[in-house]
Length: 297
Image 1 (cartoon, helix red, strand yellow):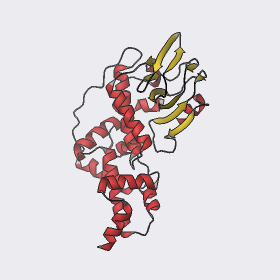
Image 2: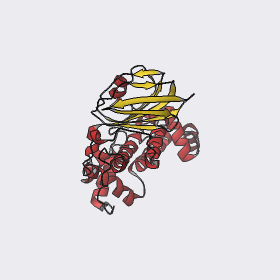
Image 3: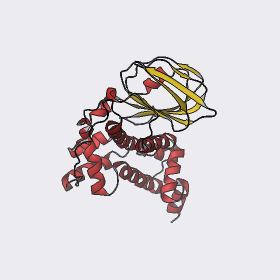
Image 4: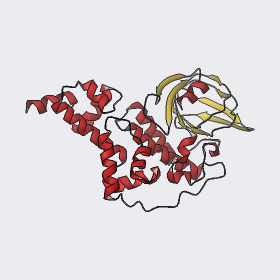
């Protein structure tokens, strides 16, 4: 998925990327763009673009299929681009220092109830000035995850990808929008399925986990699993996984000889700094001080 950005934005600076993250259903980048032209391109993924910061007024001009869009690029301005269309060269009248690019590949539109919409990556509307509060909120979550990765970031992004696709299908499909899936009473996971999923999570705390893998263990659709797990456990899958990994970190800090960097890696944090930040936020004390206090007792 990240190859999309590399191919399309060859002259743009790369400030952050999900390329090294365990994200399976969505990808994201933050880039800096100079004034001038972005070459014509045919995207293979659905793309959402949002201005995060500008230093001076800029105008973005783009066109596809005879549709031209000239838009003032200010923080929060958002564009949609479907997969498979030929987009002509885009022109920027001034440099834009921070732009969020989100890519959703075709396979992400095929999971569970989302697939019942009949909404594909190529069905997204070619649109500028997207003002949906729901989509704006989801993009903000993606931006925050890029800047401050959690131990269950991949799982969190799976859930956000499903929410984003559903929001786009409802309000931003080329045919004017598609009906949302038939509402399903969330219900709960029965004890047998729940035990199977919890055992799977506990056995794989040091591995990258996805919603699709958990849903397969539970024998339900991905979209349905995210809902019934939260109804059953009182926490989203990614929140539960984060808590279990922090529990693992506590045990290793108390009983093991592993370094903080080794524990961070085992608990699926991308760096010791991210691990320290998350652990301190959850416990009120840094990992090093926690280890000293527990062993002192």
